[in-house]
Length: 383
Image (cartoon, rainbow, N blue to C red; front, side, top):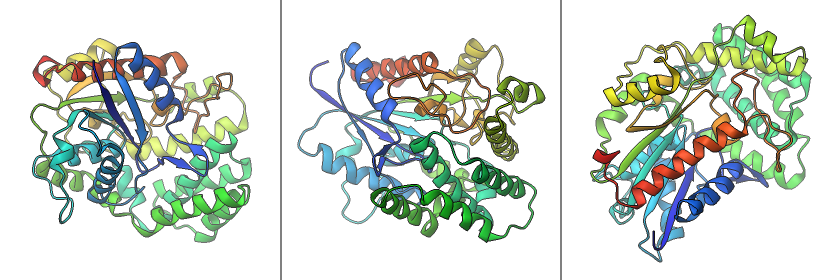
């Protein structure tokens, strides 16, 4: 395939491009670039510095600005890969005749897009948005964002902080009142361990999370219904999705994780998030091809309650099913337990799903094959 192809990795609302030297998509970017080269695609892979919890429209506008600054000097094909909410950003950008602001020439970019790939994206919304949309939930999201950043940097949270965070999320599930000073203490304890430069970058990121949380309303089943009604697929673009299904919390899962108090505590955090995400009442229709793809991999179709700890599994299907993974929401971005790899993979919570490096490589090899097919001009009907 002659010529370069621009690949854009779009984070979700927990994601970022490179925060004070802490990379979010590092493992994906490095592996995807190599495997695309193996299938004949000369790829330039770029991570988008998006607005974490701003509205999908503002996030899509930031995506447009990134592409304009990065790829305006050529007319090379573009491929969009969005993790979580990033998949919605990509869909909106490519929607025919979308308006992202006065004097924004969206079509000059959108007409170059060859594929839109969503990874664990809430195409039918997520119940978790409703929980985080409450006054206390918004602050809990803020603390959870910092906790995920801390884990990527240091490998583990301080156990005392983890226990407090588990308590916060569990109380969200039970609709109980929380003292905000608990969350403030979590914030102070975690931020204190970063150097001055990283602390400033993280504080700026978290200020975006605190000041603009428009996204949460849009990710509720009611909000996403309106989004889907006004967002159409672009003819000629190949749409595909990676679908994730994490292990249901259970006594067996707890036993499999072992006696490590840290892992047991993260399992408690996961259990609370899983139960909140399991309360989906949204319709999640599957096409015959999507249903067949899931049956082929898993031997069954997940129930409506099944999810990856953040997003209902059935809400993630859009276009062709590229890959179906037994994984949690961040496993697929390379955040799973594999300390022997260089650089090491760091898990965010212990789910017992068993996702490891071979599964990671299989997933992103399938994504690369999908991109190669789009680069060769395969139409959506041929997918």
